[in-house]
Every structure is written in C-alpha cells, then in structure tokens.
Amino acid sequence: MWKNKSYDVIVVGGGPAGSTFALHAAKAGLSVIILEKDRDIGMPVRCGEAVSDAGLRIFHEPQDRWIRSSIDRIKLVAPNKTEVEFGLKEHGYILDRRIFDYDLAQFAGNAGAKIVTKAYVNGLLFDNDAVNGVKGLYLNEPFELKAKLVVGADGVESRVGRFAGISTSIKLKDMESGIQKTVSGINVQSDRIDFYLSSFWSPGGYLWVFPKGDHMANIGLGISGTYARQGKSACRFLDEFLDEYYPTASVLTTVVGGVPVAKTLKQITADGLMLVGDAARTVNPVTGGGIVSGMRSGLLAAETAIEVLKTGKIATVSNMKSYNKAWTKIGGKSHERLYRIKEAIYKFQDSDLNRIADAIIKIPEKDRNLFKLFSTAVVNKPSLLIDVARLFTGI
Image (cartoon, rainbow, N blue to C red; front, top):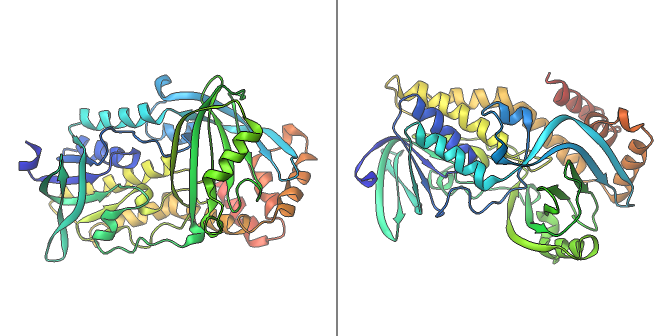
C-alpha cells in the first residue's frame, strides 16, 4: 500500500509540470509518487490549451491524439475593430488537455512513478525545520507520507509553498481573473487564433478565441485584478461578448480561475522542497500561457533533484541552487523581459491599441510578424525595444 512506504520524492499535483518532473526522476531510478487532489488527471481544464510546436518538442514528439487544431495564423482585433491578421513563423497547436495531461501522467507511471488521485494534501511534515513529507486526506481518511524531497506542482494557489513558509503572495495587478467557455455550433477558422484587445471586452487583459476543430472553440478572457474589483465580473464580460459575436453558441464547459502574470517567485526552493510550474510563477506574463514553461521548470527541477538525491546529498536550499540557476539561464531572463513588456502593454489605453493596429495594418501582410507587432507597441520606450529584440533573438 502506498501509504505505508516512504519515497525519494513526493510530487503534489499531476499537471504537466508535476508529471514532467516525475517522469524524469523516475527514469533516473528515484522512487516517486504523484498525489493529485482531483479524481482524474487532466480535470478540470483551466487553460486555453495553446502550445507551440517547438516548445512541445523539447519534451515529446507531438501526437495526433493530443491535438484539436494546428495553428498557423493569428488575428488581432483592436478597440476600433481594426483587424490585423498574419501568418505565424512558429507553428502551434490547441491541445486536448484532458488527453494530454493524462498521457503525461501515464508516461510517468510507465517509468515507475506511483500515481494516486483523490489525495488531498493539507499540510507538510518537518524534521528540524526541513520538509520531510506531507499529510492529507485520501477518501476522507488521514494519511502521512515521508520523503527526501517534496515538489509543489499544485498550481497558482500553491498551498504547499505557503506551508513551507515561502511567500507566494501576488499583487492584484499581477493576477488576472479568468474565465473560459468551450463552445460548439459556431463558425471559426480552424488554423487561426483570435485576440480581442479592448477595455470594452477585457480591461487590463485580452479575450481569446482558440479553435478546437470544426465549429468548436475555447473562448475566454482574463481581466486584470485591478479592474476585476471594480464591479463587473469576467463572467459578465465574456457572456456579453458571446451574445454579440456567437449568439448561437452552445456552452459545453465553463472553467474559472486566477492567472498569475507575475515574476517568478524569488524563492522556489526550501529545505526539502521545490516549486515548479504555476506554483513557482513560471507562466508567461504577456500571454498567460504556462504549459511549456511549467514543463521546463519540472525538467530542470528533476535534473537538480536527481543530481542531489542520487549522490546521497540532502535536499537543502544550498544543494539545490543549481535549479534556480538553470531556470534563470533557460527561462528566467526571458520571463523578466516578458514581465517588463507586460507592465508597459497593460497600461495601454484603447487609443494606444488603435495606434498600434493602424500602424501594423499598413505593413503588407507577408511582412507582418510578432516582432514587428511588439516593436511597434513599445516604439516610444527604447529600453523595452532592447527587451523585445533580445526576446526574439535569444540574446
């Protein structure tokens, strides 16, 4: 019985970040258990489900069963309803996260990781102030489980990080109130993602339409927390949009939640603990996308955990500092640049968004790209132009 054992690693959360960590740690010979509070891996889906082909291939060859739509184009709709459309140099997908997450967990299970659903972690165990396990409820029965390392992959709320004394608080302006509805019975272009940028539809954020095959799409929005507190809910914004643009839509699912568009936490490790994915705030601050960045943090954390535990070392902050360094080198610098760009863009008024759209629409479609879009957006901010250049060149 899993409750009567101790493990090298306990992973709290069975999303892409947690499963990626578990896969690589188990393949290296570590004993790993994933504790997932929900009854099914991949449920509920609180995500737009968009991912780049290049990002996905870092970890896995894309499988047809994961993909609902292949994306090659983007359309941006300004407040004045100017539509800017162009092709994307980087191919992308809209996933079926229920299948994708399930398969990632299965990969980890096939590598030797134990997976337990309906296991709700409500506290940590400590030995001399170092984390050495978790406690919780399984089918309403209490349990305690010990390990050399606990990995918090429990999403934006990250109770695990808080339990360990890590400051996981987030400023209101860095938390978006998000809602998404998967709808059917509509006409959408299956190879294009659409974004509506307007204070009318999504103040301090944006509204998206992500196709999921014929006549079906994820339609959602995120509004900045500073606007969400002013009385009009994200749900009401979305319902009004659907009534105007897709009045015949049938709503299949509705998901809500917070989207952290913040900097990565200053502290992503504690003695006996690591944080990955949304729990560590690895979400792209501009787009709110977090699948690839979460998986990347899971992989980097696993590499450090393997290095530490396989050599008989204790999982202290000092011994795990290579995780922080690796994240800063691989994803952290880009994340910081994206945050600075986000800070500037989210202050734009509708007049600024119209100006950008009017400038881009004058460029022939074959010459339009995301680099020119972002460069136009921050044309009056020289320091941000450097950030944009470095972001797209990888310097």
